[in-house]
Each structure stands twice: as structure tokens, then as C-alpha cells.
Image (cartoon, rainbow, N blue to C red; front, side, top):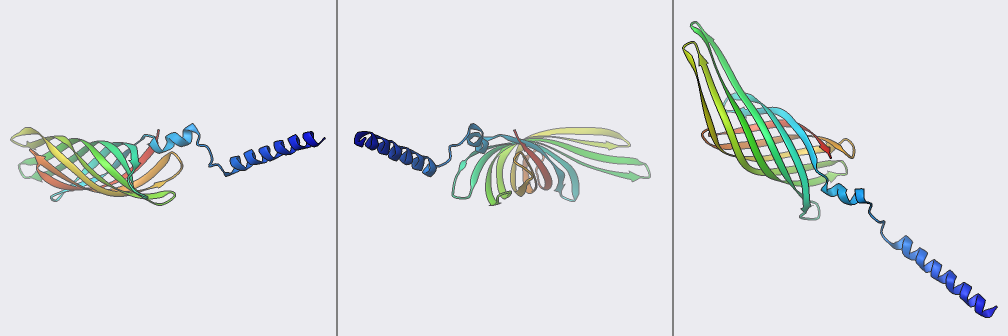
Length: 198
């Protein structure tokens, strides 16, 4: 009985030790939890772009991939953006109508720095450098003409977003977009966004 009692007591102590270790160990991450921080997000932005007295329609498709945390609160992501802007203006005179339009396509990769403010709210800043292709057209009563141009563009933007749920977020962004080359100007953009985690 003494030996059996000692064995039973030893097993009981071992079981209590294992249970204590299990309770004290941090929870094990699932595959979904581990992959969530690196999940790719994609979505669209729509709004306006302003340049030297004229206002254009701005559209953009974004893909965002988190890279790493670069501080206790700041996260770094890589963002790829495909944008389109259209400026147009028209005037009627006694001899006919005059109109002009500019269409700009942009491909801009950027670094995004995100700072969470609350569980569902965060602000971010973008710094990007890319290329654009622009086509300008002029129509007059005496004929039409068009011109193409390419060059370098940059994007410096600040925005914020709100997580509607685990997979969808909405936000807004203010941006400064300098263009260099054939279409040389600076524009400012105001865009609203919807992003979905894939």
C-alpha cells in the first residue's frame, strides 16, 4: 500500500504540474490568426483631384500587404496603386464650342505607415513614387488636336480608416500629387475608400 500510495501521489502531482503549465502557457495561434496580420487587402477609392482652378474625377485601385511592425505602434505596409484622373472643361462662344480634356493613368507603388488609435480606428501616411501616362485633347470649331505625355509622379497622402468588421474597412484620404515631365503640375486629391481583406 505504501508503494502504491506513493505512485498514486506522484502521478497526481505530475498531472497537477502539467495542468498548471497548460494554464500558464500562452494560447496557441491558429493558422488563421497567424496569417491574418499578413493578409492582402484590396479595394477602391473614388473622389476628386484639384489642379490650378479645375476639378477632376479621381479613381484608384489599391492592393495593400502588411510587411512588419517598425515600432511599438507603427506598422509598415507595401501598397500598389493603379489610378485614373480625368480633367475636362468646355466653353461656348458665338462661333462655336471649345472643350479640352486630360486623362491620366498612374501606376504608383508606395510605403504606408499605419498608426492604430483604437481597436477599429487607425490613421496612416503614404509616400509613393511611380509613372503616369497622360493624354490631352482640345476640340474647337476649327478642328481638334491631342497630345500624349509620360513622366514621373509622386504621392504623399494622409488618411484614416474604420474597420466595419474583420474583413471590411472604410476610410478617407487627402493627398498631394506632384507630376514631373510632359504633364508638369501639382494636384491635390480627396478620396473615400472601401478595402476588403482577401
